[in-house]
Length: 161
Image 1 (cartoon, one colour):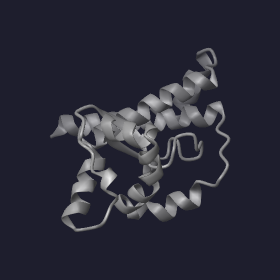
Image 2: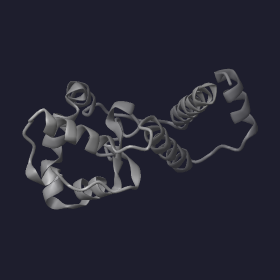
Image 3: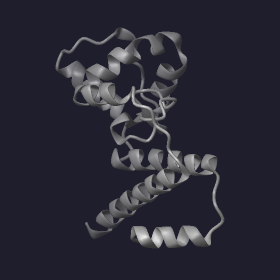
């Protein structure tokens, strides 16, 4: 599906609300991140790699892994500029997501933990997080198209193997 086909199809459909587009995009981001990770908790994989390399992390970071995998954010999803950025997304278990998102101690140490576990993303995310983002419905529709394309490509590549 090309961009011109996407635009033509969007003209045939009634306009969707910004809220419904954001919901669909959020769901697609979560699905893409979990599929890319292969159903594994990236947080705990990196945590145990750091442990094996003897890197020092706060002791509260060593929490048990839950079997339910979710799409998670390194910098909070309330930051509109980074909410749908792939470098800010990772697949994590619901236990770690809940601990770092809701527990006061978890919130306190999360900034240190993610910077230690994803050092390759620190400079980029710090630079981009202060930028202002005003996504209109067209921007959201293009991001939805992009994530759908990535999901279909990953499904086709798995069929080919």
